[in-house]
Image (cartoon, rainbow, N blue to C red; front, side, top):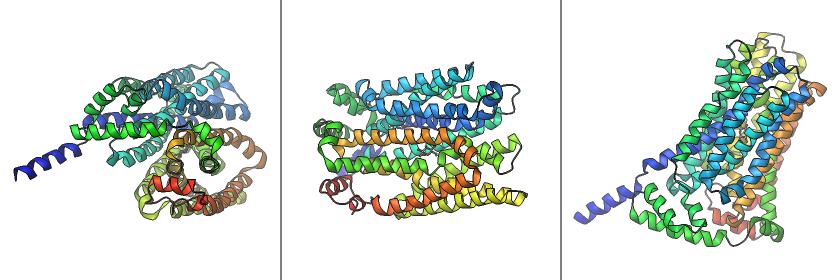
Amino acid sequence: MADSASSSLMKEQTDKIVPMVWFSCALAALAGLLFGMDVGVISGAQAGIEATFQISEQMMGWIVGSMMLGAAIGAFGAGQISRLLGRKKSLLLSAVLFVAGSLLAAWSWSPAVLIAARILLGLAVGIASFTAPLYLSEIAPERIRGTTISMYQLMVTVGILAAFLSNTALSYLEGESWRWMLGVIAIPAVLLFVGVLMMPNSPRWLASQERYNEARQVLNKLRSGEHEVENEMDEIQESMKLEQHTSGWAMFRSNPNFRRSVTLGVALQLVQQFTGINVIMYYAPKIFQLTGFEDTAAQLWSTVIVGLVNVFATFIAIGFVDRWGRKPILYTGFAIMTVSMAVLGTLLNIGTTTAALQYTAMTALLVFVAGFAMSAGPLVWTLCAEIQPLKGRDFGITCSTVANWVANMIVGTYFLVIINNAGGPITFWLLAAINFLFVFFIAVFVPETKGISLEKIEKNLMSGKSLRNIGT
Ligand code: BGC
C-alpha cells in the first residue's frame, strides 16, 4: 500500500511539466510570432511606402524580397552561430536584430535604408526560425515535444494574423502610418529579448560544449524528478557520441543516400514556396484591388480574414496529420490549391464586374489559403525534419530552410513584375498549373511517414530504398 502510494507519487512528480519549461516554450514560440509578424507586415505597409517614396514596382519587389534575402543568409549561418554562441545567445542576437531592424525600417529616410532594415530583419528571422524550434526540441520533455513544435508553426500563422490586424488598425492613423506598422514590431521583439535573458541555456548545447555540470543544473530546473534528470543526461551523452561522429558536409559528399534526402528536403521547400502562398501573404491588398475591392480599408480588413483562415486551417493539419497521414492531406491540399487558383484566374479573365463575382473571387483566394495551411504549410516543415538521418539532421535542415528563403525571395521579388507583364489571369492559371504538377511530385517522390519511427526511416533511406518508400 505504502509502496504503491510512493510509486504513484514518484510518477506524478516525473509527469509534471515544470513552469520553467512552459515559460521557455512560450518565449521560443514568441520568436515564431515575430517571424510571422515580419512576413505579414509588408502587405499592409506597401501603399504608404509607395506614396512616401514614389517608387517603381521593381523597387517595391526589392523592398519585399530583401527580407527573404536576409533570412536565407541568416538561416545559412544559423547552424554555426547557434553551435558557437549557444541557442540562448543566438536568440538574444536575433531579438536585438529584430529591434534594430524594426526601428530602422520605421525611421527609414530612403528606399535603400528600408531595404537595409529589411535585410537586418531577415537575418533575425533566419536565425530565429532555425534556433527557436531547435531550442524547443532540446528543452521540452519527449512527451510534449511534438506539440511544442506544431505550436511553433501555429505561432507563425498567428504572427501573420497579428500583423494583418495591427496594419488594419494603424491604417486609420493620419500621415505615414506605414512607419508605425513596421515600428510596432519592436515591442514584441523587446519582450523576446527580456524574456530570453531569463531562459536557461539548452542542456544539450551545454553538454556539446562538455559543460556537463551546468547541463545537469539546467535539467534540475526543467525536470521534476532526480530520476528523469539522470536518464536524460545519459541519453544526451549517448547521442553526443553519435552526433559528433561526422560533419554534415562530409557526409553529404560521401553518402549518396544522404544526398537523396537532402535533395528531397530542398525540393519540398521549393514546392512549398512555388505554390504561390506568399504572393497572397505579401500582396493580398493588391490582389483584392485586382478583384475590384477599391477601398483601402476593405482591402485591409480582407487581409484579416486571410490571416484568420490561415490560422484555423493550420489546426486541421495539426489535428489530422497523425490520423490521415501526410500524403492524403498533401493530395487534398494541392487539389484545393489547383482548383482555387484556376477559378481565380478565370474570374479575373471574365472580369469581376458584379459584387457576386467579386465575392466569389475573394472566396477562391481564401479557399487557396486554407488548402495551403492545412497541407504544405506545416507538413513540409515536418517532413523536412523527419526524412533526415540523425547524423546529418542539422545540415539537411539548414539546406532545406535556405532553399525555402531563396525561393520565397524569388516569388516575393518577381510576382509584381510577372503580374504586370502577363496579367492577372495568366499569372493565376500558371500557379494553378504548377500546383497541379506538384501532385505528381508528391505521388512519385514523397514518402508516407505516419506512425513510423525516425530510426526506421533512416534505415530505409540508407539501404537505398526509393524515396517514396522510405516510410514503409
Ligand atoms: C511558409 C511561409 C509562409 C507561411 C504562411 C510557412 O509554412 O514557410 O513562407 O509565409 O507558411 O503561413
